[in-house]
Image (cartoon, rainbow, N blue to C red; front, side, top):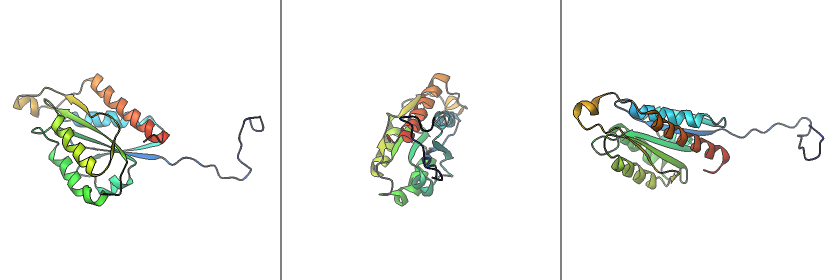
Length: 183
């Protein structure tokens, strides 16, 4: 209650200050839907935090202005031929120099929907993010679908609920950390 000991009240007529919302940018590419499921789960997790504005953008639509406006980023890709997807690489190609030395220290995380391993896709993203001087906030989250035949590789993917929950947890932790100023 106002006027109680230990209670702070604003003077009459003072403007109320609300903290600025932070923006988490999630850039993804998908061929068979698996990566999109993972990215959406991370977005849903981060969206639980009221102080976070989540922007989920396909790699073809994302660019340097989106990167510059973000307080943190998640990059999500399928593993294609033991590498990140070409469209995610294209996003990095289009955005890299415009953002270089302008986003140093911002936090990021990585999601990979892999057929077998995913580690090389992670290495590629981490190398680019090292050049951008971003700060990794969690180990890369790799979901392995074990797709090894041409039919399995090209088939629409369904990511299991426990894996989607891990993606949502990563998003929630990222959103909370941004909101609290930890990242």
